[in-house]
Image 1 (cartoon, rainbow, N blue to C red):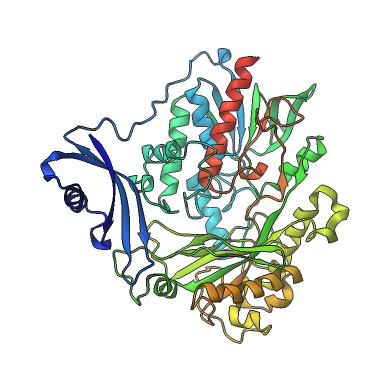
Image 2 (cartoon, rainbow, N blue to C red):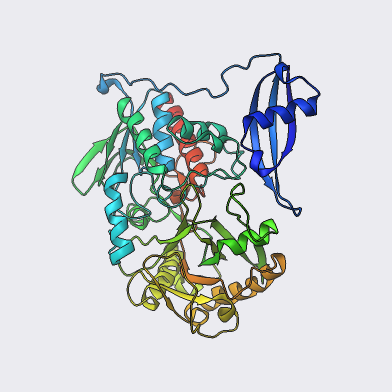
Length: 523
């Protein structure tokens, strides 16, 4: 017999299996010997009362042995006669590309992956260069390289895309490749940027050992198209790779791909996105606000928050909140400044940061309408250029205390920051576009009413957070997931405008791979 129960457990005991079993037996009025196994389904913190506690949802196996609770996918080796195999090019080796490749291998189709950046180990040197010397490698940075933007920028696995695909399968694949099993049950699962590289390497090894191919430092420079059907790609302006279809999973920052599509008359369209700043607080302040105590202790994780409001028909919201994290430079080209946030697995930084952004639509980018389909992208580029100039033409970030930002005055001093390249006091209330700065100012006052203590001179904003999502969508048919104009081309993930995070991108990659399988089987 299996019974599902919910338990309330004190933080020091929430991860102890003996305690969980004892509490389950008590709730079900059983002898502990009758419980053969407990499968935890979900674990979340309830911090609404003075003393926070965990809610644990579990299946209890009573006088019954469970089956395999953590089944693994067995990836078979592709046939050695590669000439008989169908081949799919996957452009981009972020979450969408990785999971598309794994799904193709399951279906017996050979993935040929091209990634403009470097592998995770070689990529580290370029991250050090941007952090310490403000040197931006356009093909290897926090956005581009093996594993995509998520590898070195946090690894949060929370998603609302539960109806788009099998979230549990995605998490199980991460566990199968080295992630801790806690991600299967935590309400807001997180791997950490210190652990993700090894997991990404493990996924790479699975793909290669099964017969897939991966080419690093290989930028897509053209498509091979005949009679509106894609039949290959060109990398680095030299090498042609003939394939049976293409999954385009290049990420939200691969602007050259949008220009390439436009040049080759592959339909693209503008879409709303969001821009703003990174907001940074002392982590102990957020802990005190959320947990109602000055010291959270060793058994509660660094506290997080999520905020949203409407300001004159514009949405303003927190995004990619990183408790116990740091702010990082996510620029992908010289002459721009882009910020993002990350946390390591322990989330033990003294700082909490989050994107603090405003929705951007056609009304906001009207000044750039002469750029046509690229109006929003040009607006995005302008904000990044302004931030770069305000930072002294380096990767230093312009910053301002939020109290000074609201009161429209330059900060005479700034709090300490996690941002390694450094910060410089700047009048962001003047530097940022008026529609963004005005919306952010009003939102800060609204947020101060939602979370007492959030609006404080201890907090500061750094500019600019611009890459929340892509300003361009590559349209596809809702049923076949194929481009509406080019047969055999499957736009996927964040860069195509269909995902927003590691898990949703992974799901979309799987879905596009499945669509490619159906397409190839019907030919």
